[in-house]
Length: 484
Image (cartoon, rainbow, N blue to C red; front, side, top):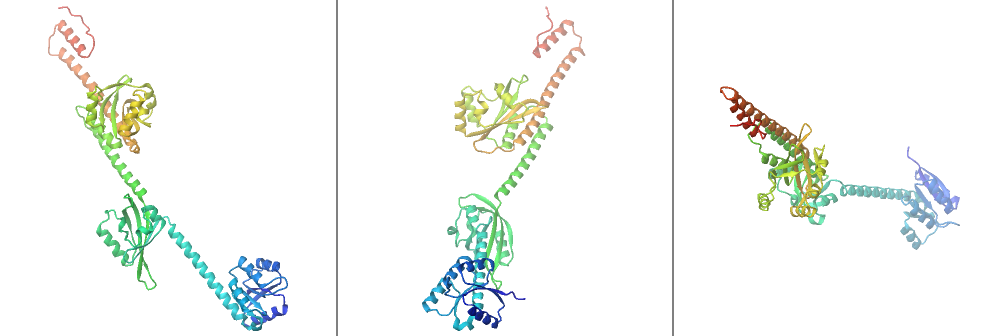
């Protein structure tokens, strides 16, 4: 059932109102109406009656059609307004239409009322549809322009006709700089011609293409993006444009590459540490160990230190990252570094105690109790030094030494856990070497005593001489006082 039209009449003559209603019924218009004569009643009817159409006389005792029109414009501008009056001159008619009336009808030609109402309703409906379409277009435009993905629209030749704000944020190019140009301005040279050929063949055939690009920004920086490129066809199905929707995946790709690098570094650390455990070299290659740790950690400089048995001092057994000329210069000035014995600072020992990894903000903080602060500052500025990590070398909770890693200023610390893992393996290796050396020494002692007591007949004096000689070699005082 068709819904009845809600008509608000502004009329002070009930007979004229009835005449209007009779004409509407003749035209087959289904309606309900409300009659008002004053401004207050008119405003109230707008709020409560909620009309679909307003029919207003031009002149009333306390109200008039122009006032009613202005109120309509202010409150419900999309509702049709038709002026119905007895007499009106041409000048007034023009004024009313300019003010926003949809039509005007002279009461002497009331038979036009039905046609005028239908035309006014259709006109307002068209206006509403246009407003809705315009609003949808504005929403769509904002959605595209403010989209979190980069959006590019090109013509059939690939020349850029539109880019959104995100494109500018990501690439650094504004619309004026890329308008009419081909997206190849972003090429970094890593995508092959075969890949581009496959892309074009896909979209020209009317299909979507998905993939990844490594492109170059306006400032030269490389970035990664995931792209979906699709053809846009007209009503006849002919491709007229191409749409590219791209997402910046640089952070994700960098995280993936960092993970791959970490996995590779972990495999290397495990391999190198297993080599230390499995291989039994005659002499410990401290420099090789230092070079491996420097490479794993990404530090600029490294010192490899071993604690003495007393725990009160340590020896620097290897350096890495420090050029030979710097080491030679320090030697020339009488400042040896390799195999130099240092006194262990108690405050430093407290800081690194019970920690596998200890972080210091600078070289000054690390060496503040051993090296004057001005010298530390000069060294830091000269070599652009930043944070420092002290990675403990331990076996069964016993500290054997440490790797002191010095990083370039501003460079992030990486793979500290790998360095600690490798340090633990180094601790196992060094303890094993120490145990092997102690065992070898004991074996030599036993062999010496074996030679003294087996296969030879020695006098007591000769035996005492041999014992004294053996004790001397061991760094001990002779036991027997032999008088010749």
